[in-house]
View 1 (cartoon, rainbow, N blue to C red):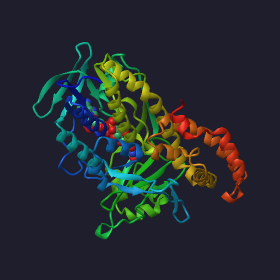
View 2: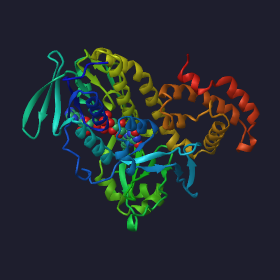
View 3: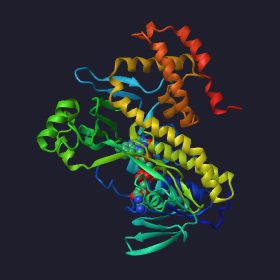
View 4: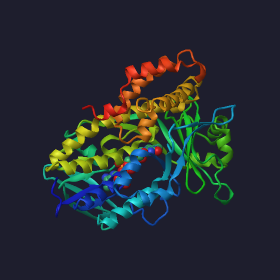
Length: 459
Ligand SMILES: Cc1cc2nc3c(=O)[nH]c(=O)nc-3n(C[C@H](O)[C@H](O)[C@H](O)COP(=O)(O)OP(=O)(O)OC[C@H]3O[C@@H](n4cnc5c(N)ncnc54)[C@H](O)[C@@H]3O)c2cc1C
């Protein structure tokens, strides 16, 4: 175990990753200071005035429970048990996410989650310094330069080590890349996003079904909406940045109105000011970060989105970051030097973060296009039926990722591709589940898909 008594560790970035990591480090006895460029979010309403939410799933919940902070958040979580598909010209259709009892994902306010984590970190003794922005790194001198906006001064902070949890656009990672100490590719998606609020009805009533993630799949673009605890929904429009139908082409109130009303009439009915919201809310960018290493000389380590940001289509970015924190904590238990901790962490996590990065990209096509395809929907119900019949062997890939923290992402990805081939064959020629030969399916599954337990403990 690495020595912690009297050791001062700095964390840069007090978002979900930095806050949880700081808490876990403090619990191990380190003296932890966490710096964040933003003002303190505790005790104030969301800065943007909008409620922005995230899907929290089993991996994130498991990490929050391990850190003892789950109870601070549980009351604010809104369960989503499946997708509600809004297709043009038909009534909305519900498809459950999982086949087992209690399988759901949860919508949680980003602001509230961050507040709860910071409160827990401060209560444990983490020193939190807001409006402190990391500006530069001097790796040879092993110091970071941090600007204190409140005191208008520049601090020199030793990298003793420094853990960089400063998000997808990480200054730390970009600085290390500029110094050729890390090779990092930032691969932008050619789609961006914009958030719109669907307000609560009278008395805080939900205006749509609240236990679902709503999807309006429209081929090359889509709208989704997640419920908030106050009865509102946060909708997110994902759309190409450029091209015939794109953020660039929607350049006037009239084109925006025609686009929104033409494609999402039922949602627009609930958002009377949708055109104004579209105009006023920022357009966000999406991308994947691939870095060939996450640490330098045992002095600085990247973690969370700073190391491996992914696109949001599996609802796993933050869940994955929370899993990072738990894994990092486990590495602290097993190693005695920072270099060894960082190496063990990278070897354990990189195959898994690469796997979820790929699955998240695949899921975009699934959400905006495939979910509307009857063949895809048959394969989904078939997956759940096969899981019911063969629970030790066949678990739908979505379920492995969202409901099984004990199955690493890489294993979910590998088993998922075997299962996809099996499904293709088992569903060939079937229009409904009644057409499926389940005896033949059982033989194929027993032959080609080992029990999950064997992949988790190959010995
Ligand atoms: C549209 C969208 C939807 C998403 N939906 C989901 C979802 O449903 N489920 C899910 O699990 N994930 C989701 N994600 C991903 C999730 O938001 C991220 O994975 C998560 O926020 C990463 O946490 P982080 O702490 O590593 O980085 P961030 O949340 O980006 O936090 C970084 C922190 O560092 C601070 N900082 C940045 N630069 C500096 C600096 N130079 N000096 C000091 N401080 C600095 C910032 O102020 C911030 O507080 C979504 C992402 C997007 C874009």
